[in-house]
Image: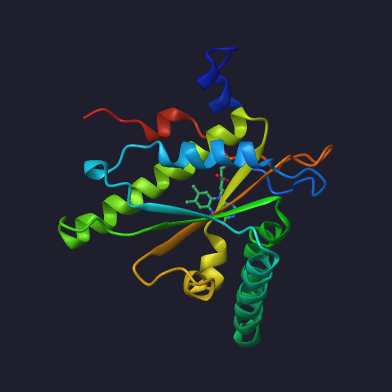
Length: 201
Ligand SMILES: Cc1cc2nc3c(=O)[nH]c(=O)nc-3n(C[C@H](O)[C@H](O)[C@H](O)COP(=O)(O)O)c2cc1C
């Protein structure tokens, strides 16, 4: 994707996951609404929109997230051997910046009633993925950066329940959004060559 291109081409080219946000620059309410709107303006099975998007706005919810995920990490560390400890600490770097991100979202899905159970669950998960990507592009378009995070769930699989999210919903991902910290270079890996992932049958 070289050259200036259309708006969409530019967004796809420039979007990268960012893990260091400027704490002094919150995401204004209008932008939050647009980002959530993008997450809900996605195709879904029979238009069922089997996703919910939660903004962790209150100090209490944010503290609970940090406390529960940190406690779960500490419990894992207590029984880990040296190799596992290294892996836990590595994954922690892909988790802990969430706690101080200017905007924290949690995305849940629930199977659409009436569909076969397994298909409903898969379709709901796919729809949540569409919502996440749609929100990341909208954030980018508004001048913000974002990252999708599932690592917190690897530490604390029941974080959804702990945050008070209903039993019928599955929390599948978090999203951190904000202004990239000035001067901070994102740890960017090269994009993969399309040839390795695109085949014709
Ligand atoms: C389903 C999914 C889960 C991810 N989980 C995490 C995560 O827990 N922590 C994190 O820092 N990044 C996470 N990422 C971001 C990826 O690491 C990132 O997209 C990848 O390294 C490619 O970089 P790019 O987004 O800059 O193109 C996740 C991305 C996806 C799609």
